[in-house]
Length: 144
Image (cartoon, rainbow, N blue to C red; front, side, top):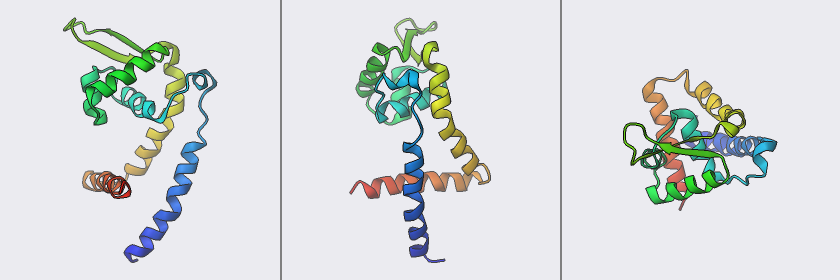
């Protein structure tokens, strides 16, 4: 199979994947919160890695702490996130998904994580890294 054949196959599959992602219904309890795509990565990181500080989230998301702080503030005002003092260091704030929205957010976003796990599970660690690196290169190349 040539590179052009594989490119052709990817050009066919990507719109189907994006279409399926776009059709994932936002739970009724979250619809009125007007969550934007920028919020989804942050919420996904909290689901995967648990409560974190703004600095830890910034590192996970590859964003500036000030940007993450603005996102956290926005989601906190909407009641989606809770901020609490770190028991080990009272100067730090720990961010987590609020109990009021955890079940809906988990049901909504966990399917993507399950799909990626299923797709990556049969691969070796090196092959998984290659998939991730390829996606990152594609993102960079498609940005112009």
